[in-house]
Structures are given as structure tokens and as C-alpha cells.
Image 1 (tube, rainbow, N blue to C red):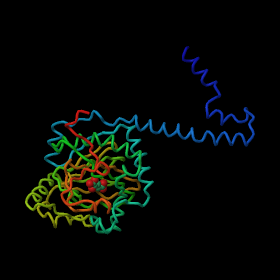
Image 2 (cartoon, protein in one colour):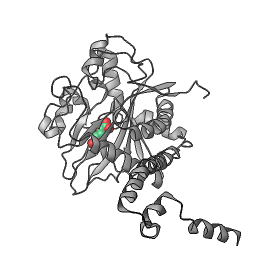
Image 3 (cartoon, rainbow, N blue to C red):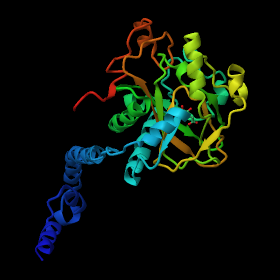
Length: 345
Ligand SMILES: O=C(O)CCC(=O)C(=O)O
């Protein structure tokens, strides 16, 4: 009864901004007055709208309680990857899709990689590679909603990453959206860490499925256990062997003939689930044999204390030129700390 009365009274009130606009005929305003009113109200309405959007984002409390079991940690260390099912709720997934879609669309054709084709030599067959996926790096730097989303979630991802890698602190190396467009090329076998601007045996990526990833639309594939082979090679030679991502799947075996008979594992995933993979693991993804997109968002993480190794990778010319080999990559602008197991806050 009491609730009914309240509802009735608020519905009857005609003083809200929207009712003022839509009740023009009853208020008998001139068109000029009406237009002035609309102009006056445009800004407050935009403010309210923006704060409603922000409230939606800030109420997004990602995955605080996700914990990994000892078996998951053991599986990761043995195989170099692990899957965490349904890490996003349906509501969170919706926000991720909207936000990352917006951030990707906003960038248009801008890769925001340093002078593609000059400094970044990761992808040797550029024409082929642009049809592997739409890749947009560091959306956290170009879109404020993506920034908020990635950083809130990355704290959780970095906590899990610290646990998987058995280390104390993680920084962000970069994020990237990887959208396999309809009928996209496969992602050839490769290893991440040799491309990056620091050497580490504890760098790790999280790959979040924004759509169901299936064997038909280009899910991830791993060669389990190969992170150990790459690690051995690094420990022997003092550097990682780099394989460019070209169009030949089998090129990886020229560098690592010992893994030619390894068994690959397809990793289909429900949207909202994620996988973590060691940056030393050999991995790739299939062709998109469908007319739909296979969207994924990823965060690449580096242990705190990682040092510049002289490779430019995703660094801008300015950043690259300001660094000397051996410098610690700890700029809060470029590689903020995501998680510190020793911190009580
Ligand atoms: O999504 C893909 O096609 C490949 C992803 C990948 O290579 C990565 O996340 O490191």
C-alpha cells in the first residue's frame, strides 16, 4: 500500500527533465523557448547519462573470489597452460564485449604499434597477417572504459598469474584484442617471449573468450609441455630463439625439430572463460571457418623487475630511444604494477 502511494506520486510529478521535454504541447511553449530549454538541458542530461554508464562500469566487481586449485597450478606448470571456466558472469561478459568492441572500433585501422613493418619485425608476411586477426594493442591506453575494465580485472588475472608462476609481483606488458574475423587465416605456431622487450621465464598471458571459441572458428591450440624445451634452450644459449609469425605452420619445427612429433591440443572455450599460457609455450590458433567473429581479449603480464633487452616490440620510438639495455621496465605509465602478493592493500 505504502509503496503503491509512493509510485503514484512520483509518476504524477511532471518536473523531471525528460517529462519537461516530452510534455511540450501541455506546457504551451514557443518553439524558440522549447529549443532553448533543450539546449540548456543537453549538458545535464549528458552528465547523468555518462555517470550512469560509469556507475555500470564501477559496479563491475570482477571475479574477486576466483581461486586456483593445487591441481590447476600443477597442470599449468607441467603443460604450460590452464583453463579457467566461466571467469566472467554473463553480465560481466556483456560489459567486456561492449567495451572492447567500442575500443577496437574507435582505433579503426590504427595498430598503434611502432612503425609497423620497420621496428616491429614479428610478422613477416604483413598481408597474410592482417587477415589472421584484427589486433589492437594497449586499448587500456586509448579508451578510458577499457582502461577501467582491464585494470580492475587484470588485478585478479595478475594474482592468478603470480600463483601459476610462483612469483610475487606482476606488471602489465600490454593488452591486446585479437578478433578473428569471418574466414580469417590461422595463427601459426609461435612463442611469445622472444618478441618481447625483456627476457623472462615467468611471463604469462591470459586469453579471454568473448565469443565461444570452437575448433570451427579458430580456438587456441597448444603444444603442451613445450615451454620446458624453450626454457632449456634459453638457459643453454642465454637467449630465446625467435620464430616470426608467417604463413607456414611448420616453420616452428625448423627451429625446434624435437617438437615435431608433439601432440597438439585444441582448446575450445565457452565465452566468458579464459586460458593462461606461459609466454614460452608453443601455441597458435585455427582458421575461422565461419561467417562469425571469434573475439578474444588478452592481457600479457611480466614479472616485476624485468629488464629491457634491446628489442623494440610494442614500445614507441620515444620509449625505445629512452631505454638502455638492462634498464628495469617499471614505468607506471607504460607497465604499471598489477598485483603485489606482499602488499596488504
Ligand atoms: O587468438 C589467437 O589467434 C592467438 C592468440 C595468441 O597467440 C596469444 O594470445 O598469444
